[in-house]
Length: 270
Ligand SMILES: NC(=O)c1ccc[n+]([C@@H]2O[C@H](COP(=O)([O-])OP(=O)(O)OC[C@H]3O[C@@H](n4cnc5c(N)ncnc54)[C@H](OP(=O)(O)O)[C@@H]3O)[C@@H](O)[C@H]2O)c1
Image 1 (cartoon, protein in one colour):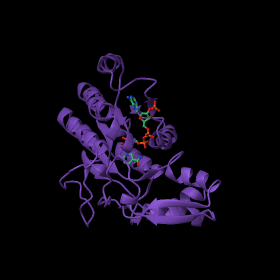
Image 2: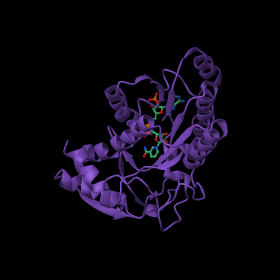
Image 3: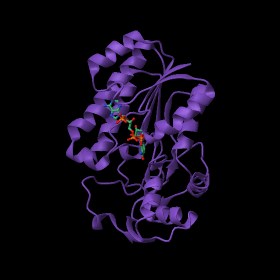
């Protein structure tokens, strides 16, 4: 199995690479320095030179707030870049797996979003990722779109909070957004499972079970690690940021992962 992996240096890519190694897959781990997915000419040239069996497309412009100030760049990476990568899949007639986000939904629901629910992104990041989904669907029938939410892994939110705990006694965190924090390792396992099982093409939702707010998630991180940091709950409007966030971020999962608490404990007590 020869795989093109974009976004290999991101937090999900870092969780996935060792698992691809373990499976004995050959893969070309790329980031923006190795090749810029927005460079259409270069992507075409590379596509003509390599033999591939599968594409895992993780590369994205992921900074939600900066995307509001740099929409051109966000659309360029998440839509044009994805179109370029999808064209490789089409021209090689191979499957592509694209990781997307709960930000394609507006967060107005009170029940978990199903894979076929209407999308309606409320920030540039979500709009650009949705256009990425559409580019994939337009380019090929052999696609997996795997939506997830609130990812944490090496160098991500949980690690950042633990670093904060060495320097701060108090922190303010929003508690009016509800989501399912999800470990990168679990999403990486799902990606491997999809490839190995040749799962049916289509859209998948992959998150931990259960739900929480950012404030309660942060409290749990400090509780598990016995860190004495006071978490003050605030509401989103107390903490103005450039991008609107969906209030309700729960994705309906057919294939339930363990609860977010169990996964977090495993992550922190490893
Ligand atoms: N983080 C979350 O909470 C979350 C939630 C749901 C879905 N997702 C999706 O999951 C995927 C992985 O997210 P992540 O958190 O691992 O992302 P990340 O840590 O921000 O990493 C982004 C990756 O994309 C690469 N990249 C960015 N621009 C590129 C370009 N123009 N050409 C080539 N590569 C480029 C980066 O390469 P460099 O290292 O060279 O910059 C890096 O490897 C993304 O598609 C994201 O939208 C993330």
